[in-house]
Length: 291
Ligand SMILES: Nc1ncnc2c1ncn2[C@@H]1O[C@H](COP(=O)(O)OP(=O)(O)O)[C@@H](O)[C@H]1O
Ligand SMILES: [Mg+2]
Image 1 (tube, rainbow, N blue to C red):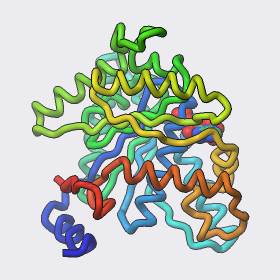
Image 2: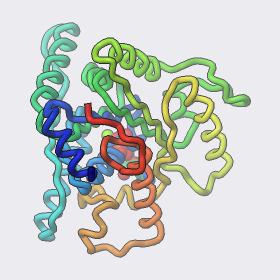
Image 3: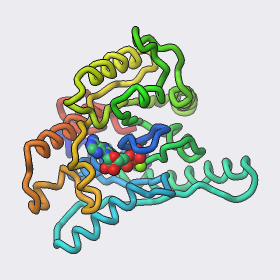
């Protein structure tokens, strides 16, 4: 059976089962929205239907990225894939308990509305702990955590001994993911595939790169995530935002010439997409069935 037919069949059989990708960590500026955008456009280009939930209602980086994309497509008469977008702001009414309850309700209602309509739901989280962000982690099928290439960012996962890289203390964020995994197993025996990706790795600092790599290798068995290479530090990631473009679009937009760095960046994105092992993404990767 071809992949397309299998996907169509899966869609018909279970119409309430979008695969939920959550991009999260508790740190701003680590590349969540940039990664979320590239994953979304990669999925759309492959023919999947995708909806975004932007939980970072203060910055709305991902929603703005998509707005820029719409504008750029109109201005340059380009046919670009555009995902549907919902921005969900945290509730500010009543006591702390009221707000938590309202956030839970709002998130659940939105998810219920969307999960029968799309193949993928992609949730972009703010860089701080919030009830909405927690709710998202509790329903994730795939969790992507980008971290910048430094021990400061590693601290978000665990405190590691600087000499031996042994884990000394698991961080609050890792504990939260642990809780989410427990809840998930109890609720529907589901699992969360947690992927930690490095972002902004620099070829200039080979020693640091190696040390962070060694530390992550130790960490991945201790706190059960899959560690994947991710993206290098490249100016192009910053330049694409105002146009709403991704490296996947270069063949469609044809406006800008591709440099060696762009080609390498596009390879990194393709590699990430393969590493994610999403349902029906790649015939050669072990199939992850649609639930
Ligand atoms: N690999 C990269 N190379 C260069 N700049 C990057 C890279 N990834 C992200 N950036 C830039 O870093 C800033 C923060 O990224 P963003 O995706 O908004 O992070 P977050 O959503 O985690 O706050 C943005 O200006 C973005 O363009
Ligand atoms: Mg962001």
